[in-house]
Image (cartoon, rainbow, N blue to C red; front, side):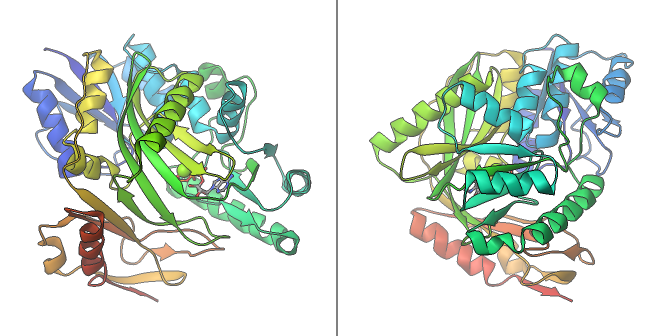
Length: 429
Ligand SMILES: Nc1ncnc2c1ncn2[C@@H]1O[C@H](COP(=O)(O)OP(=O)(O)OP(=O)(O)O)[C@@H](O)[C@H]1O
Ligand SMILES: [Mg+2]
């Protein structure tokens, strides 16, 4: 298979993802990387590493169009904010992929809600708010408890809950603090607003500001899962369901996760049905998807869906649990190679986030070798460097990193992750 494959990314990859690249190369693929140049990929993997300011969607398309190499496939691992660019590039080269507007509808939580509503998918009541006055009026009309979250958010940045009327006192302060935090993230990290020209290029009818526009949503109470799946020609196969453990309300930060989610056949069918319908409604045809569901008393409802592989350790834990490498699968789907899956559960995993105990400067992150050398430990990843500032709710919602481990049973996985977690020491100034 002599094919040129372009991988779009905002960050570097784990060993298991690189293994997926090697597997594609072993089939004859030539891999190319497009990033913002913020890291050096593993040497010898990519034929060429194109670097550009990936916030400049239109300019990136011109930059790639001016290269002599052309591509047979364009795909992505997890970088949520780059999914519309990936779809635009796939379209530019006439490759298999999702329509740019589909990717945008997954990217903007407002447009996602509109699509899901049209398709009759169970979702909470929602309202778009462009300033504080609109936010206050949305909270009054939706009622409490409710959740406020930025339209273009990720990693729960700027998301907060209004539990009851007494939270209205702090609403303006919380909203203003969140906007300040989001504007900072928009510059320093992976969140940005498309400009008018770019939204026209994608075909967005009603424009939004991805950083400062908010959604107010009815609060969905109940346990939460995330579902990673692969969709090929509109047919969806679930590859991993993860049970998420979150902070107690009003915080929404994720604390930990267990994979696979243990449930009965009936619940499994319910999840499969909901995921299939959600993917169809969004118009996702060819890519990995990551969907979040809350089981409310009424029924399971969709929190959100992305046309990409799940973040944090999900790619690697799904590989450990099922033997399937979703990066490799995403490349095959993008190439239009017919896939068939036979699933089995090889082990259980648990991941725990390392969360700062208070806001401040990270002084030291100490990960002893006995943690990294432990054969049951799958991943220890830090998301911030020593010396950087981190914020805890309500000022922000930063993670220091995470650790994950495996075991033969969910209980063994939990014991193993706790053993590693308790040995990691973080000091905050
Ligand atoms: N309407 C809601 N009701 C209850 N909880 C909600 C609601 N909307 C969001 N949440 C909580 O906030 C979390 C973050 O929201 P959402 O997934 O929409 O944003 P995100 O920034 O993409 O987050 P992440 O990257 O953490 O998944 C959800 O996983 C869920 O726990
Ligand atoms: Mg989410």
